[in-house]
Each structure stands twice: as structure tokens, then as C-alpha cells.
Length: 123
Length: 232
Image 1 (cartoon, rainbow over the protein chains, first blue to last red):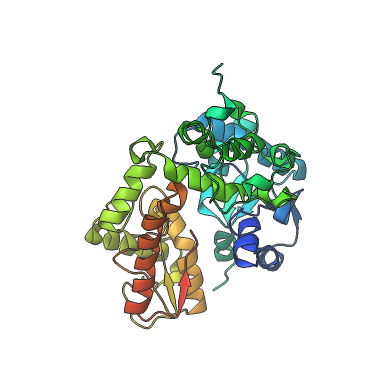
Image 2 (cartoon, helix red, strand yellow; image 1 turned 90 degrees about the vertical axis):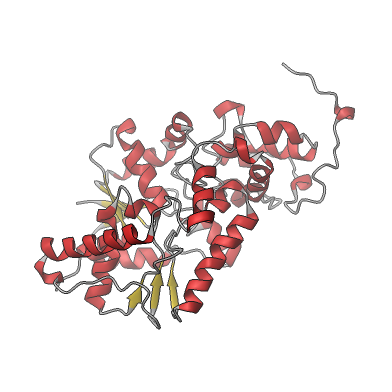
């Protein structure tokens, strides 16, 4: 299965600006431990597009705008042909699942980063 | 179209704001980078200019600051490093609290009053946690013995909970717990003020944000936890 990874604005670009460190490499290291093969989105890291679910957008009731907002994110994902998208953010996770069918990506599996880790545990 | 006379505007209205909006070169990089540009005739450059002109009513009453997700792509590309997302959040904070869109205000009020956005009583919260923990062992026998340590003193990790995980998405509680179990981690969940989301952030309400964050700090101190896991 091909997977890809989305950098949430708050863990990446915004953390870098506000706290001096963006969490770009840490999740990628985790992905490398869990999967043989995954591909990055383009653009990536600090230049990543927002999914459209941030800043409380899941709660304002502006649904049409939120779906339209996500078009660039969905195009990025489509370009990778990934079947699974890994995210470490509750808002991104909710938004991707909420809009994927609108962009013919209903089959896309959206997975939390820590869910991927839990799936890989062998006890 | 409404015509606004320039000399009728108070250009100094937002002069003291610390976002450097008056340094704008009007290059338009922000607008080109913004996925919300074009919606409702919004674009960040226009917003920056309106703030510079002191058009308070127009920006505060507009849907723009709420359609924007404060993703900071605009600030990332801005050659003058104008803090546009910070400015958007400040504008949100000027909106009459009665007119905040959607469920944001209701959720925030519930959180301030009860410690979580859902007003979920403590007994129900603990019941859900225990129920989900038992489900994990039922589904995967290798996790037998997995328990949720509530209010455990001196744990290495204290974790907050996103309200949707004890509401509509209880299955997503399981992932972290499985990892903790496998790693034999010493962890805990507080029974009060466990809410991980902070809608003071989204509504531009600094006081609310401080109160909610302060409660998490209190939990850390009260339970003498060493590390905070706050994935929200």
C-alpha cells in the first residue's frame, strides 16, 4: 500500500515560527520505522498546504467553504496515488475524512500517526 | 457597492497592534499562497490593507476571519514577515461573543463551566474510558490486562483527551493506550479538566485560553506528572 504524510500547520510551520522548532523530521522518522515505502506530498514541510480543517473550521458551520478550501490538499494527495494518508492532528484527520469523497478519494484511508504505530506493535 | 470616504476612516484604529500590518508592500504573495483566496471575495492582502485603514466594523463583521484557518502560509511567504494569522485571531476576538459562528461559543462556555466541551459528567467519562479499555482486550487478547490509570500520582506521562474521542470516535482512544501498554509506560488521565481542545484559541479569547491551559498545568502539578502529552 502506498502511503503519504501531511504536515499539520500547527506542528510544522506554526510551531517553527512560534517556538523555534517545526516537527517535520520526527514524524518522517516514525514513518520510516513503520513502512517500507511512503511518498512525501509536494510542496512539503513548511510550504505544505493547509487541509482546510484548522483554526476551528470544523466548528464554524461554513461547510461549503471548508470543502472548497481543501481542494489543493486533495490534489496534492491525488498526485501521489497514495491509498493511505497519515496525519498527527485531530482537526486534519476529521477534515480529510469529511471532504475526501467530494474529491473522488472516498477510498483513501486516513490514519493517525500514533494509530500507525499501534498497528505495527507486535506483542 | 458601499462607498467609504477615506477621510472618514480612523487610520490609527489598529496602530498599536503588533503584527506589522503597516509594513505591507502589497506584493500579493499572501493572496497567491492562500487556499481561501477568492471565497467571499476574501484575500489576505485585502484584509491587511483594511486593517491598515482602520476599517474595524468591516473586518470584524465579515466572515473572512472565520473562513481563514490561520494556517500561516501567508505569513510564511510574506517578505515583510507580517503576522497575518495573528491579526486574524485578534479580529476574531473583537467579534461580539453572541455572533461567533457555529458551535464555538457553546463549546467554549461548556469547557469553562464544566471542564470539557461536552459538559460530560465525571462518572460518564470514567465509564467510557473503562468500557473502551475492556473492548481492546476483547478484540485483541494480547492486550489483556490493559487498564486506564485515572488520576494516578507521579506518572511519567499525563495525557489530555480530545472531546470527540469520548463522544463519537471512541475507537480512536485505543491507539495511544496500546502503545503505552506495549511500552509498559507509566501514564495517567485526569478525571477533571481532561479536555485537550482549547476553543479560546479559535475564538480569539486570551482569557479563556489562559484559564483552560492553567487547568492543565494544575493537573500536572496536582498529580505530580513528569511529561504532558497534549496531542490536540
